[in-house]
Image (cartoon, rainbow, N blue to C red):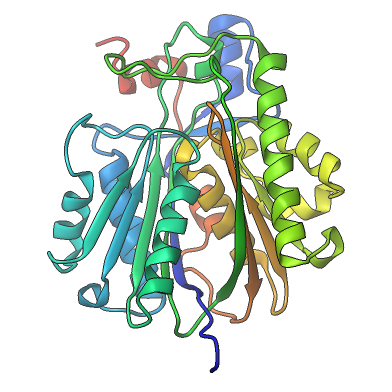
Length: 341
């Protein structure tokens, strides 16, 4: 019996037009604490994660193309949802015309939520050969304007169609590493702002340890080696930490080049790895392999492997979204964040 391939049939990406440069922070605070980030994307007054999740969902479907009515599974990922208790997926399902009988889920508790939602889609299609999953990750993490943690937080979104048909990238396997690591990047129930203990070495030790273990577990599980991969996507809380992880795994800056987005967009939270994956897909050629490694504080990491089997690209691609921008100053930024009226 022939085994059905499963993977990405289409994808879409979106980035807010507004940007703020690190120089604006330096003028206001005397410093900027996000390593390697030169500017970041900022959502406008009429934008939030639901509008962006809807946009990338439509773009992902259009890239196949696939009618919304064919979707049997939808998964949404974000750490900055506008509601604590509400079926957020219902808004997206209604806005783009998906069936009201499609199974939906919201993934919201950590920056790992993007790959969590992607695996939910993969598992659905594996269990339902005639099924089709749509996954959207949209995020704009928030922290106190008085915290250095806030400096690097950006915004962006990506969407993916998963199925057995007309694949762009075949899914090859995944692995997860999970442990207890309290105190780094958390958000209490009654607070809309993320926090941490501001002990970078403590947080980075968990980040590096979990991602390296998940990645090594995946490579051993599916029998691949570092030299088999052309592109590596790693969770990007800043532009420097992924390079440290890549080096420990035996990869170089060349492997990271296509997916390095934090320097221009900032930390995209739950959308970080999925926007990075979209960037890698834009650049990848037939036969290339892509390794994706996410991270969520607390702590857990997912590693996933894809192989390029089709040449269809997103339209618009990530680069055109990145280049479409308008700069704002720090006062405008404070107003957008609701810090001043």
